[in-house]
Length: 160
Length: 160
DNA sequence: CATTATTGTTTGCCAAGGCTAAACTATTTG
DNA sequence: CAAATAGTTTAGCCTTGGCAAACAATAATG
Ligand SMILES: [Mn+2]
Ligand SMILES: [Mn+2]
Ligand SMILES: [Mn+2]
Ligand SMILES: [Mn+2]
Image (cartoon, rainbow over all chains, first blue to last red; front, top):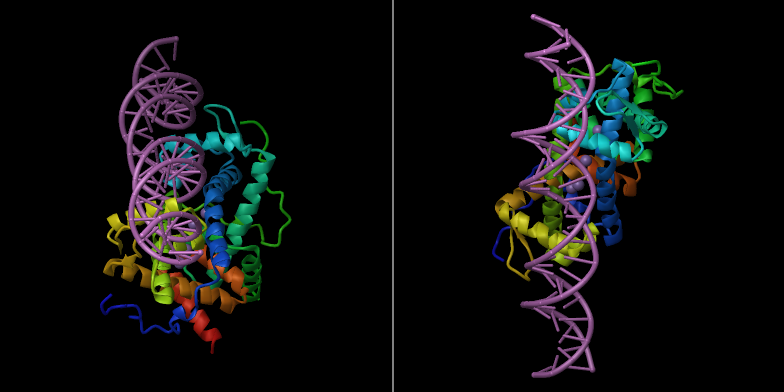
């Protein structure tokens, strides 16, 4: 196969993390499965959380607001609302503002809480506000309870 | 719009992180856009990184190995390989082991490096190895360079 | 070397999550 | 109160990323 394996072209500080051998197949598989599962609920959580936030801060949650805050077309939002309805997370009448069902409320609260912990942790670490918000928006869905607890503790310590 | 605003029903420790008002629309939109963009490349990166790791640690990367390590059907892998080929990331002949193109190598190296930084950071924070691996698999795709640098620094400090 | 086992590919199916264009409803305003 | 504007939904299209089943190639084995 010739010569190459260009591989280690970093003179980085990490001691060539390929020092980590491949994990056993089943464990490795569980990693990817967990990520796939997270991706199934991610969008739903973001919608529900946003709807909850709009209700809290604005008093109402309209499809147009969701569309502009998510940078997505109104058609996309409308379709998603239908799904959230079917899932029993929102209650909506055509052409009117949205509301969350109790289940939706619960999900919104849980998501908001988790999101906040991750965001505050990043801030405590020293990440700038804008970046912290961007990173938290994605990271929040991939943080286990174990890690979340550690983040919370770290943030509390830091706040002395 | 009637009466309700069911809102705040948590007695949580976080000082009601809704103390964070909604960010300006454009900034908020950029958060979600960044996440959507990450999700477009995520899977590709995971495949390429895994292929690179298999080549490094096993000397060859076969579709069957990828399928079992990702807990996905061989059909799915086969289809994905075709895409990676079209993207110029892998070079493959039917029924033979895979190889990475230079572009693929570069992506594999970059992904592995970033993945390693996140993983080691979580370990340094005190997260258990298994959990750290699971969380890192998802988080790695949502961590900005700014945050990455801070994680790296934290890990180095911790290692004294 | 013939058979069986393993591995890889193709095909056809599905759901999610985007989009645009067009139709419909509600609200505002002249 | 009619028309214009703003908001919402529907229809139809596309790409991704999954699957199972049938088929093809290669490898292993008696
Ligand atoms: Mn999010
Ligand atoms: Mn993600
Ligand atoms: Mn990775
Ligand atoms: Mn990953």
